[in-house]
Image (cartoon, rainbow, N blue to C red):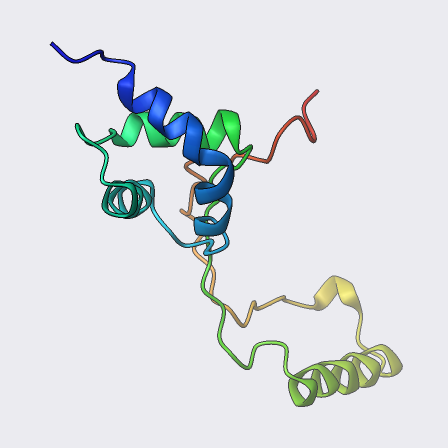
Length: 126
């Protein structure tokens, strides 16, 4: 009967070189990373997603963050200039910020709840 720690030992031997290069793609999932590691190193038996997840978190020091898609031209120079001109004109007018309504260009949902959030290593822990 094979040892249950075999995948962990194999992963530990390769994690230092394989995982950081794979994690340069911030949108990669643990499942895809697990498949790529199993395909590349031909692990037998294959390592589990739980083992890869622990290695990514504990050994490589990477955690997951929620990704938000932003329009390609969201902060292009023309749009930044237009915002700056509008802001300057608003400040120079007789209008009051107390009567202003902010509308986010990216869209906003009042019912959006942050489901998770992680950060790398020990940074920001209190």
